[in-house]
Amino acid sequence: MPSAKMQKNAQYIELGSYQYWPVLVPRGIRLYTYEQVPGFLKENPYITDGYRAYLTSRLCIKSLFILSNETVNIWSHLLGFCLFFTLGVYDLLAVLPTLGASREDYVIYSIGLFCFQVCMLCSVGYHLFCCHRSEKTSRRWMALDYAGISIGIIGCYIPGVFYAFYCNNYWRQVYLLTVLAMMLAVFFAQIHPHYLTKKWQQLRSVIFCAVAGYGLIPTVHWIWLSGGFSADIVQEFVFRVLVMYILAVAAIVFYTSKVPERYFPGQLNYLGSSHQIWHILVVLMFYWWHQSALSLTNHRHSHPCPDYPHHS
Ligand SMILES: [Zn+2]
Image 1 (cartoon, protein in one colour):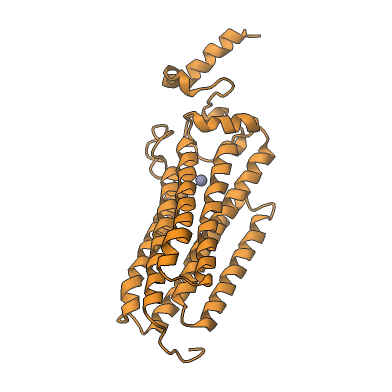
Image 2 (cartoon, rainbow, N blue to C red):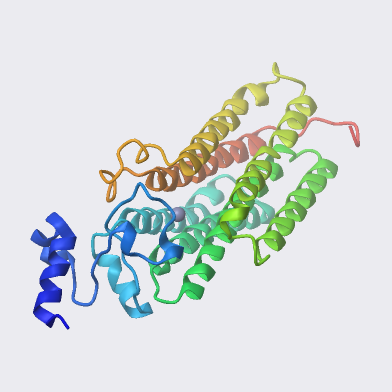
């Protein structure tokens, strides 16, 4: 049996240069290499070190303040949550009153920003508790993280559809209902016991691409109903949808390809890995969409609805 002191020395050797930053490693939390962590934490072989593992809930929370390979993931969405919380308060108290908002506007903005906040918190929870000593707990948080992304997507669709089809109640209801039905179907897929297995990895990507890609249908319909690309409102807002899709495609590409750490294995363990880029792109997407919704709301309140023929 090795003595406690020898074990401690061995730990410091495994920690590499990290041993020189002892203030960042509170007692009870140590970091592991990819080979040392349990199977359910082996998601990305290009992240070779800096893993937390085998922690109790209390130590998971404590690990918020140490530098590990999840620190940027946790804090990027914790700050994202603060951003959308602040934006929510600011919108409801300062921005919407100056726009002469109706009760419906308040409801739509509250739903949208609430969805963004839930998405951020589920992600923080997952990245904080994925290293829990119980695999079941870790998996539950992972499922919640996936559900959170779906909720975030709902938070984009609802204001988007609501203000795009502001003057056409029929299609507005059709798209709101289909979006809700689609997200409900995704939820049921997510609680399927096989959903999070490696076998279904590809299917998960397909589902997310389908959910995000579905938005092209109401977009094209909106362009057509508004009178084509020459219409003022289309000219003003179509590029916002385009930027949103560019961000979304970039986010999904980084997420699935594990670029750039795939080309620099072991060098981007703490900073610069694909999942961190994905997190930042998600915050940017939500922020961009929120600003676009505000601009569209402003447009809707300053331009009266033209008379559309019904059901066109
Ligand atoms: Zn994440």
